[in-house]
Length: 425
Image 1 (tube, one colour):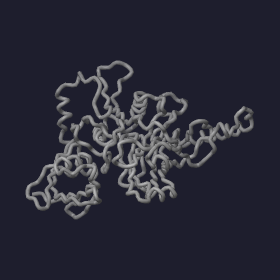
Image 2 (tube, rainbow, N blue to C red):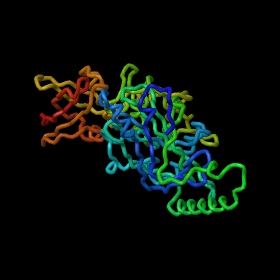
Image 3 (cartoon, one colour):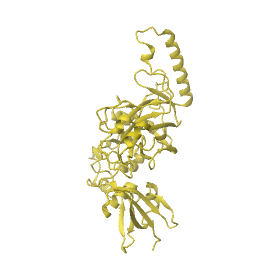
Image 4 (cartoon, rainbow, N blue to C red):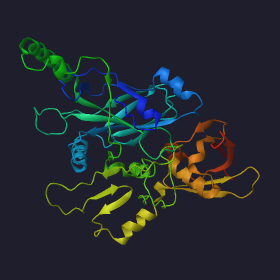
């Protein structure tokens, strides 16, 4: 990874990102790695051991936040990117088919769970001062999936990782990328054989002014990410309209937005990126599979969510639709009743959206505990089993349940919250 000497953030100078896949022989100025669809490759986020010892002296525990995204190359505009993802998604058998997946069971060195930010992005926590983070990722699309014409040259993609030095940071401290091409198993093997034959032929006929070693990358089994100098360009996240509820909840979490989200969160409510984090201020482009077709139709104009605000031609949307957005239906909200051990009266927690983010906001609103100071939220059921609360638990198993809420200090400025379930009256 290239080094930026002018940055005060220690992490961006020394973080190494490596993917366990070979580098293409034919690459000149950018490195393209042919990979097989569905194959899982290991991503290694690392702070070298000698530097880990140097930086850990006198520093508090440093929890980093990295967002792994599959993007297109820079020459594609955001509109073209989303149209390409929309075309790919329309050809899948299931609307739930993801673009980028992670093997959670075989990923190590992470703090907490892997979060699905959008169909083409996931988020992880890791502590570089303790150990490296190893995440198994799988790209579910092929480089040739973005055209209906057969025999088209595969489209290069970028695997991009944005890292925040601390969950409370407001800007990206490191951005790395790796250029890849994805083929089916036989296609990847054929591509590698073709490149080997071409390389052998070039060695026999190379008579140009430049040496062959200067034109092409050396052959390696592991490929390092390059560091990007532009840390301000917002990434494009794609989630289809069928999954709009999920991405709407992420409007409260990913990279931070001060505007209202579709769930009706107010401007003064600051929701975390994940369970522990304050939201950074880097803008993010979010497109919900509503781009206009190539020909005129009677459908409504497209709308784009950009920086957390709904923009576009809203003239065809009546007041009734707007009211529905402000007051979500029952399947988009959950009511919990909680009280402290020394209280007799319950306090209602209106959880909108029914996710950990919505629960954090409800607790902050009722008990004045900042979301950035909540380390974890647990649920202890009637059988005495304690589990960390996640989105599915809130959405499907908690509506109108009653709890004793217990707040315990985890660190000097962090708290753990336990909701102990009580029998229904």
